[in-house]
Structure formats: structure tokens, C-alpha cells
Length: 387
Image (cartoon, rainbow, N blue to C red; front, side, top):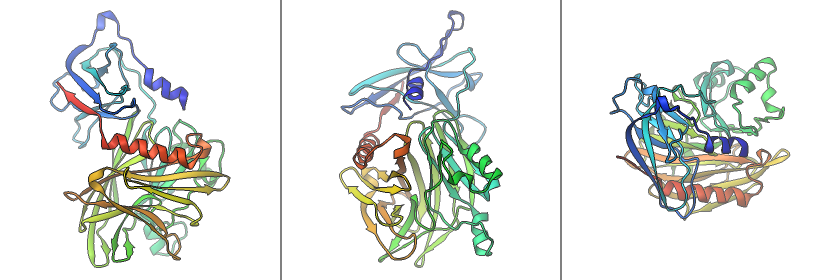
């Protein structure tokens, strides 16, 4: 982790004197916290930038070095809308950056943040960055269960792929699984899929509570990939209208995962309910749960095979509506829920995990400290000003 993290923090492209970048505007990024910050993605609107080639846009730091950037066409209309970059800012500091154009060819960076639809494994949708990987399940997998066909999956839960390498593994693991079914359930030195989801919420699946019961959707019905690249992958999953004890619920999930983070961002458009809950599975109900109302998170730490894994969900203060450890005798339905207020038909939360074998977190305390630190940052976002 340290090697590539330092590479991305300090990586720069040097332009020749003959090809000096042409300045478009300046951007200030202010950190109001008493701690330094990195691996937080800044998004700058470039829809009004009139340049010959948007692909030539660069971000320069105060030492005139180019940062790693990613251009994103958010609405898929064929025109890039924003430019992403990750500043490294000291405590209580404001940094100034320059948006410019350069004729110097930029190096193509590894797409550490990657996602895709996977038709060769029924119809998963899978995503990853340099620290974690996830997947969830589509309509063909659902229909196989409904038709009694072996190999299907009926779940809107979020699965975890426990990776312990920084490079992308999604395509490699699926190819290995194509050659030998079930191959990704064994650790070949990069990690494995041993995180059981079933009908549980996995890590961040949603539900609606009515009286004392929880209700949830079936598999996603369609997908749309927005972007992949060195800093972010994002996509949209839609779900058929589902029933929460007589209440029709509609939800569309806008999901993204940024470089250097263990938590996926979920922005969900939802109608039919004033509150919705996001859950983490309790598996065999032998793990340790915790919640921090002041930092708006819930967590679970458990032994998984020959290692340990921490899972968690975090939100911001406006969306926080409490939590509940829900335990039942019904298989896979015991979850630790974070309750969320629906505001203007929307909720936003972050969910993810840390695997001890990845050497990212060694103890429950380390994992929960990460959740608290993450919460402080999303509740006090970087202040970005385009001048």
C-alpha cells in the first residue's frame, strides 16, 4: 500500500519550457480540520470550459506539478462534465491549484478504480479500487432461482471480495473462475470471495422497516456504468418497484468508489418511505457489534475463516436516524442496521470493510477509528472554490 500510495501522492508530470500549460482558472481547496487529509476526491465543474481538447486539461499544484486527474462524463452525453483530482492538504490549510491545458501527452494511469457488468458469471455487477472489492447480483441470477435453475442468486445484498493486493483483480478472478468453477473462493495469494451474503444485507444493502419487520428489494434490474479510472469508478443500478408491507418502494442506487478508500458511496433516489435502513450482515451472530451515534456509524468485527474482518456503514448528520442490531432465527436475516432519513427523496451513506489479511487494519479498534475519522471528513467536507 505505502509504495503506490506514495507514488500517487507525489507523482508528477514535467512539462517542457516550450510547452508550458495555458492557465484557465484557479481552484482553492480548504481543509478546516485539525488533521491533514488525502485520498479525498475533489470534483471541479468543467462544463463551461471552452478548449479545443478537454482531454488536454490538467491540474497543477502550487509547485506547478501535474496531479493525477480523471475526466468524467456524468450524464453520458458525450461531453466531460467534471475533472477529478485528490489533493494532499495539511491541517487548517488552504491550497491553490491551477486548471490549465497542456499539449504534452499525459501518461495513461492504471484504472485502479474499476467496475463492470459480468455476464459470464450470470449477471453480477462488480467494482473495486486499490483496497477493496464488491459485487451484487442481477435479474438473470434472480430468474434462475425463481425457475429452480441451479446456480442462481436471489439477493440485493452487497457482497465483499476480500483482496489483499493493490492491483485490479476483478477480471483475473472471473477468468480464473471460468477455467475452474469456484476458483475465486480460494486464496491464490491475492485474496478470495469467502464472504457469505445470502438474503442478508451484506455490506450496505438497503431495507425498509415496517413495525418490527424489515423488507427489501430483489436483484437489480438494469445498470449503467458512468466511469472507471485512476481515481473513481461510478455506476447506477435500478431496481423494480418492491413492496414493504403494502408500501410500494422505488429506488435507484448511484454507487461510487474512490482510490484509497475502504468505503463505497451510495446515493439512493427513493420514494415510498420517509426512512430507509442500510445493513451489515451478522453472519453466525458471534462477532462484535458497535455503534457511534456521535459519528453516525455502525460496525461489526468478526472472525472469518483464518482471519478477521471489520464491516461498517457511515453517514452524515442530516441522514442519521439511529441504529438497531436486529437478530432473528431466520437464516441470513440478522443485520446491524443504520437508519437513514430520506431527504428530498434521497439518502447518502458509505459502507465497506477492512480485512486483517490485507494488513490495512489489525484490530476492531483500528477499524472503528477509521470509521470515526472517515465520518469527521464527510461531515466536514473540503471547501472547493473555482475562481
